[in-house]
Length: 491
Ligand code: HEM
Image (cartoon, rainbow, N blue to C red; front, top):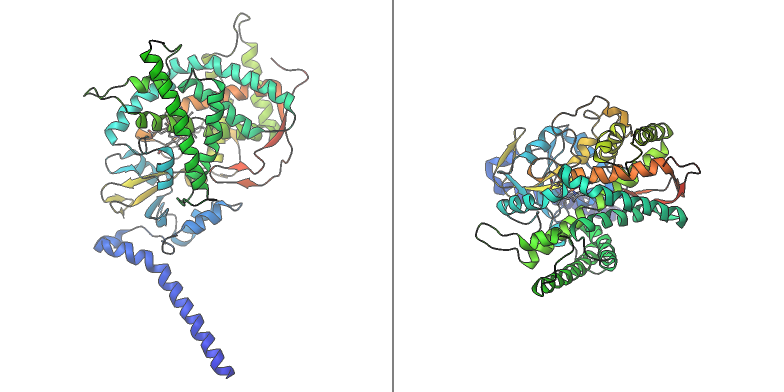
């Protein structure tokens, strides 16, 4: 009897092992056999279990204290090929992870188009830049990028940004304990809505900002539309955002019809006016999706990076003093008649610029971007099959010790005389989808740090608190802190 029980157990265990082995190979059999001979040229990798693919290990790593363990496990198993096959967000996927392979994908618009997961596309909008055709993207990008970039646009916004930063810092220093990150996100949101929806009042801005927090939590989540899941909450937030922007759009149309003119033209007006070569204007859905995308992209990342740069400086007194001395020097050289910062002074912030570059590298706020192969493409001798998704892992490039020695260390001086080779530094991406807000973002972050360094310091309540890496790296407590005004401010 005992022997029979023992053999049954062995059979059950063997059955489970065989079933697991079968399931482990199922994705590969299903997706690779359709490729015929080409399957032998796929890069190395593993496609996980059916349906969930590698999502379980991805989420496990990004919910632990070591998010890089996800890609490191590929490097350990298959070597540093810089290109691996996987199965992510419900699709067969190729991940590119080193400068050479990332750059090739980013620079080739003929063979790679956008390939964002369903959750991102539904939430940011099918008519936003990640859902429209190549030509439409080119046209709308030209129209919308100019007003946010270039010296003329930047110097126009400097005064508003400075004024907003000065009053926010004053207010926070009177507020006691604050969630520093939450307040910074509100600040950067105020700045981006000023640029895009200048004439709308505070209540509209506050309504919009509240919904964006929920939207963002769903953007990198699995598209599970069931109550309780991040994606479900985010879809609801998107509906509210659309309703608010539709309300603003309708109001503007009514005002135009009744001859009331806007005080100042902003991005919403430009999008309402633009026509293509056949005289077609954008419809409401198109205008709203472009705005939802810009308002989202334009505040989340800048808010987070500003927080991290402040935290890193405060944690490293030597860097703090060096950055502060540079700002004091700039103020000292200023003619007495000049009020406030100028673009020329901003360009003299050599050390601060390194602080921002280093923060962008270490934090990896935009850790990965998504593409799709439009044809079969050869990358580093391997094939990326037509229709497969491609993930470009910036985070891995920035955290690779062969590219940036001692990558986890925050050290602005690593940028002294260092010009990264092509593809080795990609905080804003590259190619035709390079972030159009890169200069604006660096400017806002630097203006904040200028006033902060001169007059304030940050005291975190839980300096050792844990981290969350999704959707973006942040302290669990949203950086609970006090902003203290110095007793002898430099300005
Ligand atoms: C620290 C701040 C920021 C970081 C790290 C960042 C990062 C990025 C990255 C990596 C991309 C490339 C996406 C891709 O290749 O698919 C991107 C695209 C984009 N960013 Fe930013 N961004 C920042 C700030 C901003 C700001 C302030 C704006 C608004 C003015 C903005 C608007 C956009 C838009 C509209 C795109 C899509 C571009 C396209 O597809 O053509 N970003 N950003």
